[in-house]
Length: 84
Image 1 (cartoon, one colour):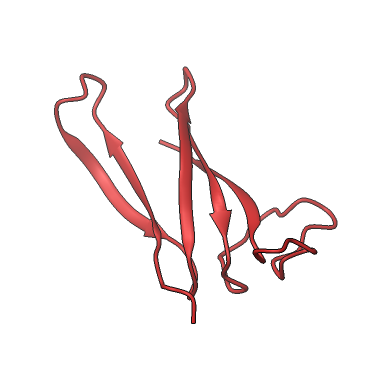
Image 2 (cartoon, one colour):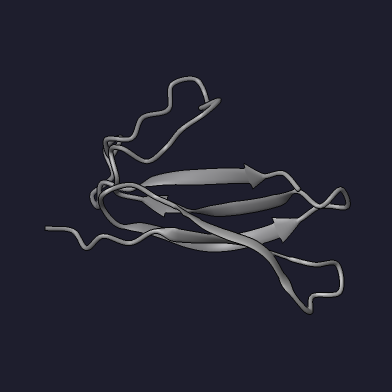
């Protein structure tokens, strides 16, 4: 049975001295965040892997699947954009 985990989404202020908001994203199986970047408009981009067939999706890439797609570890890559 896979361990359940989720990916935190955190936003700090411009000075980096305070947390503005936080939440988590994930499904019922293991989800791992591996990278984060912020653009000049304040949008944050999270990347990682999921083993959750119920990982929340919106505007998915054509042909995307969340059922392993042949991966030996049944993982799919995700990219999440978090607008300010």
